[in-house]
Length: 392
Image (cartoon, rainbow, N blue to C red):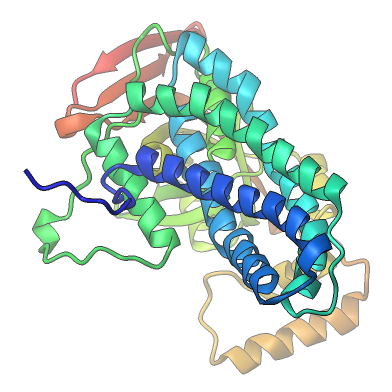
């Protein structure tokens, strides 16, 4: 039997163990801080003190922010998307405090860093006992919460695929990119963050969309308000583009654009469209279909005048979707409009809002082995919604 006497770090196939190993390294650095408090009065900022200060600075300047990023951007959002019932309630109570701890510890570190910088270069021996103790106690309490409540939950709830995704995200944060010889046909992700049942969803699809949208925001999804808008031309040929939703409520889903644009012309001829939200970070998509109507002039005015002046001017300067000779010509058009309109441009009649009044809304949750969850709501003649499960 071979026994290693070297304390090796776990690899990223065990991401929760890596996070625990980071905590162990933090504890070692906090102990070095305490040792430094006793060393400085007797020996001053000698070579040993300088090396100790450099080691502490290196860890908390470099490794600690990566560790916080692992938790804030990957571990917590993944847990929030997976947890249900009592687990979800515990996260709702604990996660805000963990994030607040990170901000508080970052502020405490800024105070300590200025003292350690001077010790590291030998110009000072001043190190505040109060600052060290406050920093150490904050970290100790913070790590205890994570190790007793967050880590056990992650180990209990996460699938092997989720653990792999978490480990890969942590590697990328550190500039470690796993190589792959996959072909295009091999590129596939086996989803596994969460599930979706008829009991999970709310009776009203707009309320369900609002719930998922808030969860996408909390999970720090990149541009959760970005949606694909698909329209068709007179020949029935489809066209899609990405726009930003500006409002949603019981009336429908609203965005703003140039009415003379390609999508505007297509909607004038066929006032039906399909919207698609895809939130890869939480393995969800929402498909919405329905008829499209223009918003009132008052609504369009309200949004137009809330935009930055330069955006207002750009809306006037651009004949959206029309060909133009060059970028330089676009810039000239903008400057001409800016000089003519000044700081208070007026909303043109050809610019305003569209609202898709939904007739069908489908919620899709990625699942393992492509056996996804799909729940669809279809509006009935009396305005109520019929809810059904669809096969993947």
